[in-house]
Image 1: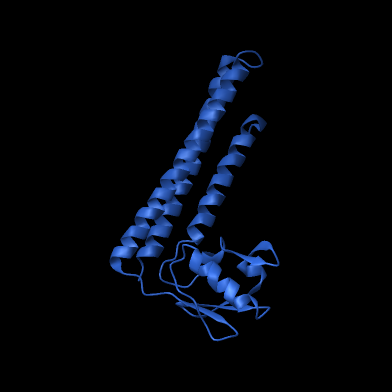
Image 2: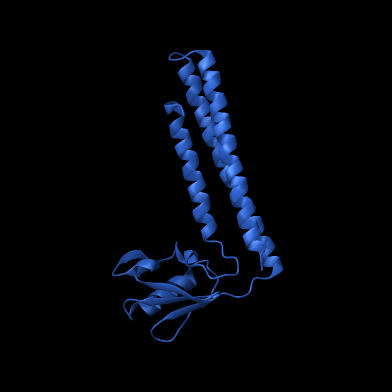
Length: 183
């Protein structure tokens, strides 16, 4: 790989990584601790991820259990979950918090697939923007440092790189859509 294109490949890899982490937060009927990744609780005045203030387990396929390391955090964690967009009401027994995920309906699954496809399309747009930035960079190089033939060659390589990552996005969309539709 040409070192002049590595910065753009790196950006495309980051876009793929972002899409994968975004997909982890989409719940598809099974309890997944990653749905709590974006939730922060006020821990002694500092916004802290739930994973750092308690132990999260999956005792049943449709249940998450959060055991805070300090009992005083139960109400704080509950408030943070209620304020988030997880859409599940927590219940506690004084020592642990339980999140019971409802069975996902067919209609909800279809909506989730639309969301998966939308996020995939956003990732493809990001890839195309990175390609555009790369082409602009190559055109500037062509005005002085390298020949037109080299610029064309690099533009072709950049297009192949873009195609490779767009295919990867398509695979991720397909995999996640199948996972969401599986009952």
